[in-house]
Image (cartoon, rainbow, N blue to C red; front, side, top):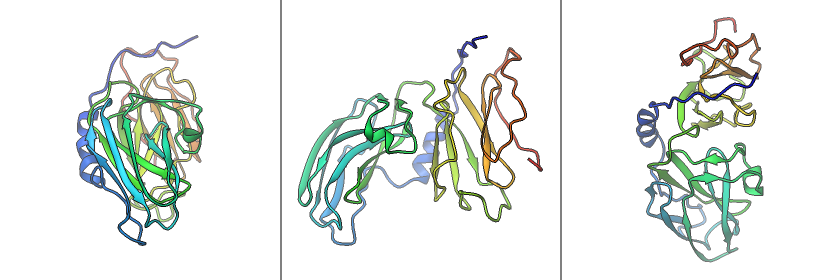
Length: 252
């Protein structure tokens, strides 16, 4: 039986975006190579809502490796902007989109290739396969929807060797099922952004050893990744209220 997506929206995003702004590097900052300050990437303005026209300037003259494709990267996907010179100044103008395409080569080269709406929060202008340049743009407003950040899961306490997750790292979940990792936490072991969700993802929980996690959708659907075992879900119970949280038992 086909399940109808719920009609509610989440309000947790209001608290999440200020937290991100405090934890992450400042928007618009450039990453310069040790070869010299001429290797630079600058944004003006460094923040704004979707639709903002951003002027991007800099130079690859002092970079250890030059050239490469410049793109705007969001958790869901990425979009190419233009080719960087092998050595010399560059300038682009780019309007921050309200959604990302799917299936393009830039998105396919990333860990998060699902596309979809751009969410409020940090996005990155970055160069692939060339100069090591990256600058952060803070999206201050976007249409509400399944792209919004909904919850954070941290590395399990007391985990000595968490599989693919470093101590202190954490993952930020989107309602669409995508995950973004921070503070040294490597690429996620899987995401629910490509399974045709009937309801948005609202929470997740690590297994005790950190080798996997369960994702929970608002309709009670459960998705497992890594070494998380599937024990069933409540997606067919048709409860009148949405599910809001999930936790792991001590033995997994």
